[in-house]
Image (tube, rainbow, N blue to C red):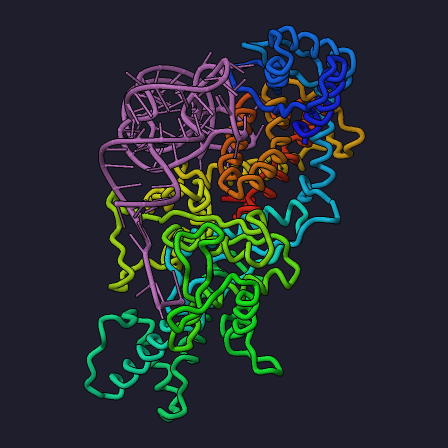
Amino acid sequence: MIKQKITTVLNGIIAEYLESKGITESVNFTVEVPPKNIDADFATNAAMLIAKKVKTNPRVAAQEIIDIISKKLQNLIEKAEIAGSGFINLHVKNNVLYRELKAILKEKNKYGSISANNKEKILVEFVSANPTGPLHIGHGRGAAIGDSISRILKHLGYSVSKEYYLNDVGNQMLVLANSVEIRYKQLKGEKIEFPADHYQGEYIVNIAKRLITECKSFEEIDFRKEAVKDILETIKEDLKDFAVEFDNWFSEMRIVSVKDKEGKSEVDKACQYLLKKGDAYEKDDALWLASTKFGDDKDRVLKRSDGRYTYLASDVAYHKNKFERGFQKLVNLLGADHHGYVARLQACVKMLGFSKENLNIILYQLVSLVRDGQPVAMSTRRGEFITLKSIVDEVGKDACRFFFLLRASDSQLEFNLDLAKKQSSENPVFYVQYVNARCFSIFKESKNRTDLITDNEKVNFDLLNSKEERSLMKKLAAFCDTLALSEKTMSPHHFTVYLIELADTYHKFYEKCRVLADDAALACARLKLIEGVMIIIQTGLGLLGISSPDKM
RNA sequence: GCGCCCAUAGCUCAAUUGGAUAGAGCGUUUGACUACGAAUCAAAAGGCUAGAGGUUCAACUCCUCUUGGGCGCGCCA
């Protein structure tokens, strides 16, 4: 929170400075952590931006601002100086760091939460894989990102609902039902060839086997229903093992099949609404969405000439439904192979009377697997996809999630199984978790000392003044910056990067500073510091859905 | 053909969204356990950020073009 505080107070000072110069516009300056070769805690580019407006030398403006800072922010800033082409470098007082550490100790896993009560309701929709087979590794990436984004937004105080859109209508359902039926008949001894365009996986055979052991008569069996039931169960289980739980499972069937008193479904009503608004029209016996009006490159069919709705029609109704449930902000995760769909969806949102900002679509790129240094071949068509479950079973939930969350979602991800499986230093998950284990171990050891106090009020934080201790305290406070950045970019990968950096800072501190020092007062202060480290590591890993074991 | 995404160290990727001398991990080389966990730390080597222009006090970041890769372009979902 330190950076935010400094930004706030600087805002006041800059405004005052501009006023004194007779400038009414505001300046959009930033406060940031300088590169590590620079000896300063924070830096701002304010003077350079002002100089441009006032047409003066940045260093002159910087000096004038520094004069105000050193007069007015004596309790916050130890030293302010000009650097480079006009940066103002700031050294904060140690007290600022101690106060922040105390805030962490007090707020514990709530640290960084913003308790504004008027936060938006956000709906995060992710995975939403068709219930035609087990989740594969690509779904896993979407699941990890969607789940972590949800946790981050929740931590920030938003009311977040995680939803899985169950695409249980349409052609693929017929194919699924038929696939099971054919396997069933084959098991009964009928000689039927299995079509190449049907679902090839072994799981289809297993569903058929179950149906046979249940001994129902052929006429009684609803193959579609039975298949979806089994597959959905598997999907839910796989997600649970991956620490992903949804608040709501929304069935497309509900949108298409459930009718009101007048015999109309939600899709009927949505299409009518669009037709009335002039955003849909009839042509060639079909109903079209005029999506080109809002940036799509062609209009799309909503209702086919044979009277059946398309997937898009359901989706319009579904998103209408989302807004009607009171969600102001929708977040959709989509595999990058569906990027062609984005323009259509954005057009829908505009037709429903909302703006681009109300729908945030996160595209995530594909995952490729590497084993023994070789790429693993995958083909959905031949049923050769790698399931999420097999990866979770092989490398563990924590490592799997960490690797999925390690990269920005719009860069392709290479998942190195050899590395993820290593229970050693090369594996970044363990590097971070090790911090928690080390801290825990120190606390255990500290129980043998009788001269230590734990009361926050009595501990002398002033003793935390070495370079390593200051770095660590600053890094802890940067937790809030990471939260803000993750929200702004809608990307949890900043947290994996942050946690690795925090772990790095901690391990360096550990080498230089013995926590259980002979001097009791110092030991107490350092114990408070590593208590803060544990809180941040546990909370941070928690936001990624990753555990923090005490022992490894 | 049209559209979206990507190109950064030998490999996999970051870079606080326009800031200072572009950073991590893996791999390579070297050193450190007789005090809290060596799953760690210290150090070395490795870069014309694909290429060419442009905007800016400042460009890996924004704009244009070129090259090379991934993906999409159905009255499928």
